[in-house]
Length: 346
Image (cartoon, one colour):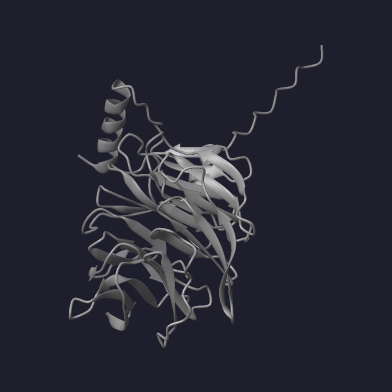
C-alpha cells in the first residue's frame, strides 16, 4: 500500500472517530523515503541545492535538486543541524572519537569532521548569515565561537532562567533571538563590546515552552510556536506581541514553523496524529491559506527554500518531502470567472 493511500485511509478513519481532516493531498515534487528514523529536523542549504534531515541519531544530506535526487551516507549526530553560509559545511550536536559531547562541524564534500567544539548539552546550532560566527544554546546560555578558528566569544547569559530551546539570527546577523522552556523570548544586540539584551517577551504563564523559532527575512517579525497550538508573532525590534495565530488543535505542540522567503507566509506543523496537516498562514491577516496532508505520521519539521519556491517537511513516517509552493497556492487560488455570453439583439 503506497503512502498516499495510507494517508487517505487514515483521514477517513479519523473522520469516522470525530476528528476530521482536510481532504487535500497534493503530490510532492520529491521524496526521501530512506530516512534512518523519524525526521525531527529539516533545513535547506543557503544555495537551495541541499537539504539536511536529522533524526536525533543520524543526519542525511539530500542532494534533492538534481534530476535524480541522491542522498549521502548518514552521519552520526543529534537533533538540530545548520548549514554554513557557503553551503559546504554543516554543524550539529555530536560526539568526538573519545565520546565527548560537543558541536561538530562537518565538511560535506570531504565527508569528514572539520572542527569539534567540546561542550555539554548543545542545542539549536546556527551559523551567522555572514558565516563568521557559530552559535548554540548550552543550558541557559548562548555560546558563540568565531569561525573557522573556533575562538570562544562572550556568551549571551543572565537572561534566561531555564534551558534555552531555540536560537536564531535575524537577517542582518547583528541581532540574535533566543527562546526557552518557559515561553520567554529575548532579543540580543551583538556588538563589538559583547551581547546586550534589548527586548523581552514573557508569557502570562510559564507552562508552554517555545518549540520553534523563526525570523522573517525582511527583519520585521519573530515567530515562536508553543505547546498550546499557538503561533506567536512578535515585533522583531521590541518583541511586543503583534498577533496570536490559533494554528493547530488545543494541547498539540506546534513543533515547527518557518517564514517564507518574502516574509508573507508562515508554514506550521504539529507533532500529533490528531492533526497531520501542514498549514500555510498569511502573516498579515493571520488567516489560514491552506492545510494539506502529505505524510503517514506526525509531521515534525518544515522549512522553506531560500528562494521561496519550495517547502520541505519531515515526519515520523521516516520520510522527507519537498512541495512546490506555487502548486500548493494554486489549489486555493480563485478560479477566473467565465465570460458571460452576450444576448443577441432582439
